[in-house]
Image 1 (cartoon, rainbow, N blue to C red):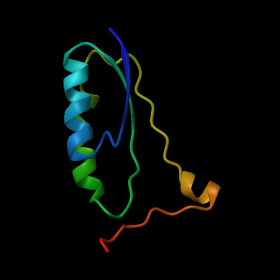
Image 2: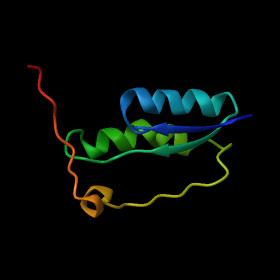
Image 3: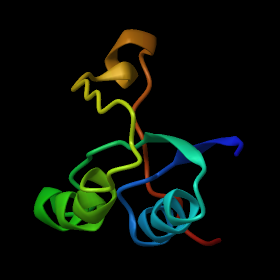
Image 4: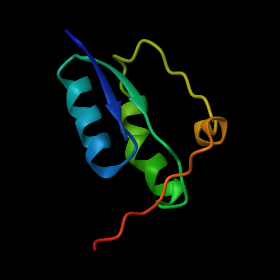
Length: 80
């Protein structure tokens, strides 16, 4: 099967997409940003079933703040 990169893999939509791709036999690389916008516990629960998937060949996690290295912080956009 093919490989897929899922950004936001611990969010609601991304976690469901990740689970479906894994069920279909795809190799998935998931990336997510654990910001204060979502509860960390909710995101960890969202991604927990994907982490239990036996078809995963590797499980690697890295906690890092890429925003500080490029001088950027996520912001909430407001409608005009």
